[in-house]
Amino acid sequence: MSDSTPCDVSSTPRKTSGKRKGPALLHRELSVGEVAQRSGLAVSAIHFYEAKGLIRSRRNAGNQRRFSRDVLRRVAIIKVAQRTGITLGEIRAAFEALPESRAPTAADWQKLSASWRQALDDRIVRLTQLRDQLDHCIGCGCLSMVECPLRNPEDELAEEGAGPRLLDPV
Image (cartoon, rainbow, N blue to C red; front, side):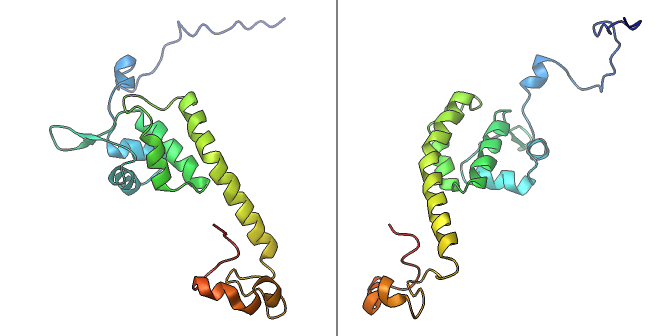
């Protein structure tokens, strides 16, 4: 048996930073710099997301931007969605279905991710095909002088215009 006793945290003195603690701190609005710091993004990125309609702020009496704390969750969702290749337009459209008055919940995330899953699966298929054809094709429909007559006889794809035709069928 050990001679040490558990520490009673309720009687342990705490150092305070002088900042407000408790519920008032949780409901305090954030400056653009605080949002940038907490999210790991540049201030310019926060301004860009706001300009694109992905997040919102209000202006205080001094004309400074103030963000509600739920913006941190929205920025996190934006960052995750972008890493999977979801466009900002798709993210904005998805956010329009969410209430503005609160942070997105786990249930909201389930709906968003489910709506993006098929597009992500399609992208994975296209990338896999590209990877598998990379040694033989540059995506223009002219696979090689030897194979072109099989995949693109008489240069039929030229009628559809310039650019890739075989890699990303519509």
